[in-house]
Length: 252
Ligand code: KIV
Image: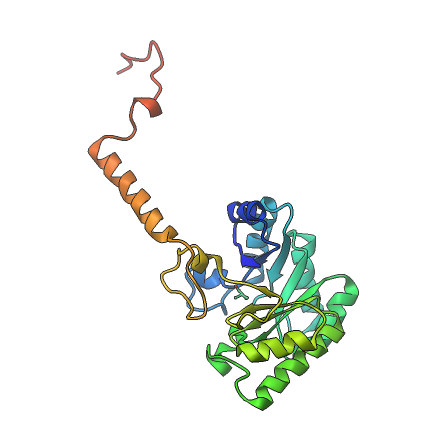
């Protein structure tokens, strides 16, 4: 699984053969200039999901439900999650989970909205937990395993495990029959997910558990600088880029 926020990236996800395109609320930090994911709105996720779905034909598209779009009122949550499938072209939603999302997972699943549960570090709780590794002692690790089992029993089709010890992720993976997808959770998960901007080297910063596999930021800078230089020096546009129409030479 890899995050995607637009149609061209969706197309590339298919070209590469990645199974799942996650329209993460990380779009808030990566593309919308917010300091956290908290300001991201349902409209923004719906708009980015619709863009990704216009690019994707094969991959499963998961829309990441933003802060406070679920968890308070069930009818509101159903409406917000339902919009992602009805209007935006998602195949499923992801919820940052806790005890409050077990029944909601059951309700959404019963209604035909597949749910991917997200446990461990859930950045929408950053004002309570910070952005630190979770499940580092026996009690909190046990709570994550229990929540994984409760969400599986409630119908979740997979579990994202973020920033937890690798041996805990291994234990969750063993305890569940649905797939686990790790980010900062070691190699023992069934799958992995990263943020596209970090993978391609577009973002300025990279999480300590992430990896840059390219340097798109430098490539973009080089191309932008070359364009700016070419315009300012008069090299661009050249004859190849221009068309002169016969009879229009002495217009003024
Ligand atoms: O928003 C996001 O990109 C995510 C992934 C980090 C799992 O939730």
